[in-house]
Length: 302
Image (tube, rainbow, N blue to C red; front, side, top):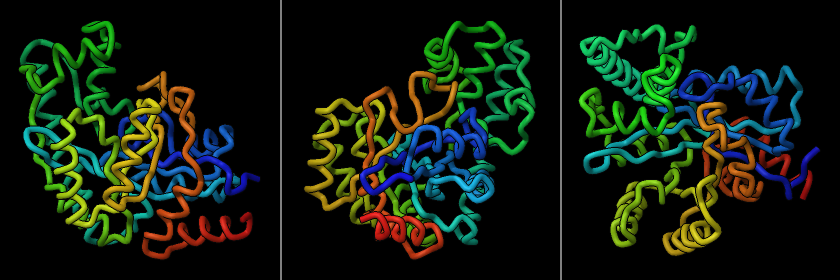
C-alpha cells in the first residue's frame, strides 16, 4: 500500500470525453502506476465518475478516487479550463450546467460535421462517437477521424488545416464565464483549480490579472505540476500559488493514445505530484465519502 509520500494524478480523461481509456481501465492503470490517488476530470462531463468509483470498490483497488471535471469557460476570444475536484456530481445545479455544456458541445459538433460534409468529407457524428454514444465529442475526435481516413497525416496537421479557430470548418462554442464555472464547482462542494495556467501563453501581467480575477470569484488552486511544465515553469507557478494563496495541484492530463507521449502519473517521464497536494485540496472541499477516504488514509499513514 502506498503512503503519504506517494504520488497522485489529479487530471485525467476517459472515454466519456476525449480519452481512450474507460473509467475502469483508468483504475487499473492507476494501480499499475502505483498511484495513491487519481482524479477523473472529463471535459464538461461527469458521466464516467460512477463507473470509476464503482471500479475502485469492485477491484478492491489500493487507490483513492477523486470525482472531478474540467470545465471550459470563456476568456477573451477563446477559453480557459477550470478543474473541479471533489465535486458532488449529483448536485442538481451542477448537473444542470454540465448537461447544458454537453448540449452546446453537441450542437457545435454537429455544425462542424455539416461543414465537413458540405465539403465532400463524408464524416458522420456517429463515426466520431466510435461506438460509444455517451462520449463527449471534442476536436480530438475530429482529428482522429481525419487521420484514420487519410485526410491528414497527424494531429498537428488536422488542427492547422481543419480544426483551429482560423479554419473554415471551425465553429465557435458558447461558453459560461469563469465566474460561473467557479461558482458551480463551489456550489457542488468542490475545489476550483485553474488548469495548466501556462498553456494559455499569456504575458505575465495578463496572467496575474486573470489570477486576481479568478481569486476574487473563489478560485482555490492552480496546477503547478503538469506534463508540459519544465522545472522553471513549475517554480514560477508555485511562486504564483504562494503569492495569491492558492493551493498547488497537478496532473498529467492523460488522454491515452490521443496523447501517446503522456503517461498517467508520470506525464512525459518526470512528473511527480505529491499526495500532500491532494490532502490540502481535500481539506478545502466539502466533506464527502471521497474526502474522508483521502484524509483517513493520510492520518493512518502519517
